[in-house]
Image 1 (tube, helix red, strand yellow):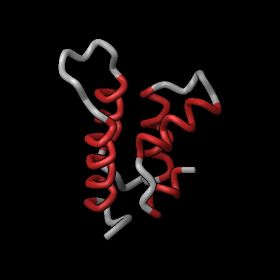
Image 2 (cartoon, helix red, strand yellow):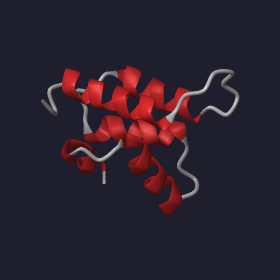
Image 3 (cartoon, one colour):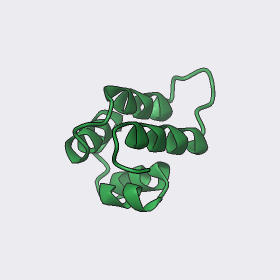
Image 4 (spheres, one colour):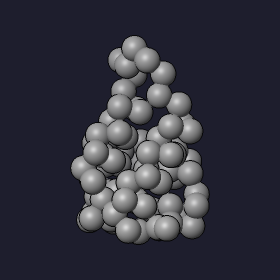
Length: 81
């Protein structure tokens, strides 16, 4: 499913779909899945997912922000242009 990121699908929708399929998938697991699928991506991408899904965050981390960050890290790693 992560390959859809390369086709322009928003990361937030993909991550939520994975969580819907398997309720035991949390932020850490999403980060591991992303890193396994795209081994050259920065570990900061995984940390961004954790920040996005952290309910204790005092500041809002909207879907648009995680979508933009994951796209940024994919571009930085050379997976998309």
